[in-house]
Length: 410
Ligand SMILES: Cc1cc2nc3c(=O)[nH]c(=O)nc-3n(C[C@H](O)[C@H](O)[C@H](O)COP(=O)(O)OP(=O)(O)OC[C@H]3O[C@@H](n4cnc5c(N)ncnc54)[C@H](O)[C@@H]3O)c2cc1C
Image (cartoon, rainbow, N blue to C red; front, side, top):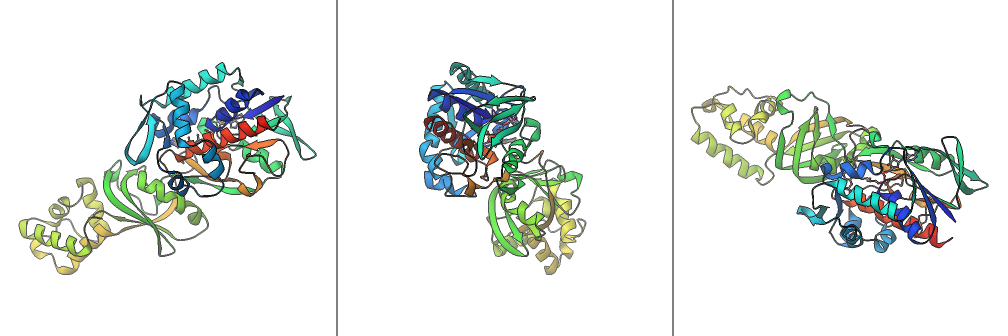
């Protein structure tokens, strides 16, 4: 009995391991010369493999809270931690329940998976892109790679999304599945930087701000808010809070909805408290100018941009500062508004939102409801989550179910 798995990312690797352990003869096809390139660079190279939060909380971080229930029950965050530790890869929990490879090297996790694939005698075909599936009368019979027909009893499609195409995830599987009749929920870049309408000054480049609050506004209404860190990079708004908001921003943006990000640089202070703070600072720095005042409130690299956005001159003497200008300063500190016109694109998006419609896949088996003997796993599906280890867990858990069910139904 033969199972062919397409894509040696976390989902395809886990599916292969489960199928092989159940006694199937597994062939794993990977277009790149190495396995799991995405995993190797995940978590800024440190591998944020999963999150330690509770089952319910875990589901709340996903676009769909029902589809993954079975997969996470079958193979949870604790199962994944045990899986890696059994292979000798120690994991370590950090702030926000994020679980990282303890060595700080995601590549250690990749190497352990590689060894495991070898020990389970899985036939690994590297640098072997799959060109298409063989489907006859609604049944998947195998695949075609490099012009060669490879027959299999079951096929697991685990080719990932479209983001970071340099790692091999170029959307091939989405094409194979749609050709087979599956519905594609339109893919969008997600966990991605957002590009404002205005040019950001060079001074802002690489400025990292901590303890700010950013909110997403859609057609003039506040949609959501996140607190934490942000970064100005390549003329875009970037960093953890922006990436989080991007999950809800990109689709409406491309659907033509007015999309804005509003930044509060002083979330701990109410408007009134900030007013009082500014008044106190003016009292102390009476003889100086607005630049010096603002310098005491935000990092130096932000001052000119901030004052320019508020329409205030940095040279204005504090002794001449009128109440309306003081209010302008307070308001720009509490709500700096950026209209968003674009996002960072596929080569910067950490994940792909959208993918193969979940309505056409059985959550308990990951089998296609349309094509017999075809299974899905990982980011190819219409699942996406926040940063924090959730996306990798989803890939491993769906891979686990796909591999197990494909082999137990043999
Ligand atoms: C920079 C970056 C950092 C990230 N950090 C984190 C993190 O810290 N925590 C987290 O949870 N998630 C993180 N993610 C997301 C996470 O890596 C993905 O969600 C996860 O890798 C998806 O796994 P997958 O197996 O479904 O797909 P992928 O990892 O994309 O693997 C798919 C594989 O299929 C192969 N393939 C594609 N087409 C073909 C074909 N035609 N034939 C053969 N092979 C093919 C590809 O080469 C690839 O190896 C990060 C992603 C990126 C890009």
